[in-house]
Length: 335
Ligand code: BTN
Image: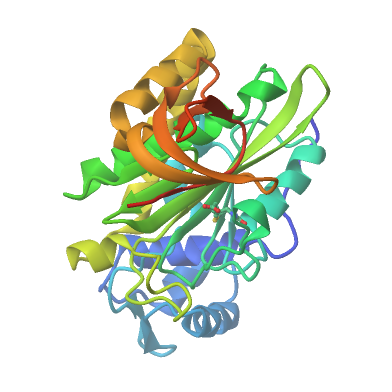
């Protein structure tokens, strides 16, 4: 399978190695000469890259004559650190990191067409055109949230691909719960909610033939350390930090999430839709008995959620007595 060794805009491997070296020796001064030796560049290059890291918001202290150190443990999602933590995992083989890109889903889609292998992860510290569902944008402030996309090549019928959205939601929910004391609510099909506000979302896109999926990309956005949101989002969005008052180490959360997702994904491939549908129904209080408004674009109606069908589609008992299956739509709770 053809492999793109690196992609325009991805973080230079040696720059990532510099960051890893500083992170692994946080608060310890490392001489420019040692850094140059260990990552295989000249001392003047080390100096230039330190300047670059500073511009990107990494707190590197010290100077050329004495050496450098990280003032505080940096929470940059370096591919080396992630790969080390995900050894043997499907998602630990190929990690592409961007300090800034338009959308990790856009990049992953391109990689899918280029024949990149299953399990490739595209990560960004910042997205300038993060995509949400229904053509909405996804606010992706630098270094505060998790913005990543995984590339999958499952043997599935196209109609089953949306189950991967729900699966990723379940894995994210479990990872958040294991790392924090918070228990986000899953709102069908792709929302992670906390106290009625949006904490995260998943956007799955695919390339398929009529009867088989070629590849699927699953893009995940989680608000982790945001302290505030732009005015237009402030009443709708929240972050783990806003809800708990505590900072979270994004790398740790990402490792948990991808570890959980690998095991959930394998189980789904082995056991089929029932595993996802049953688990989603048992975890999401929203899936049954909640009063909702459904907007499909073509129509809008109100009813009570009545569980999921065997394909994972939401059932809603409309006020006029009919039971409808929601194939795609914006579902919001009404009180
Ligand atoms: C939604 O709730 O509308 C889905 C939001 C998905 C956002 C993530 S952030 C990483 C990935 N790249 C994108 O452009 N979008 C997804």
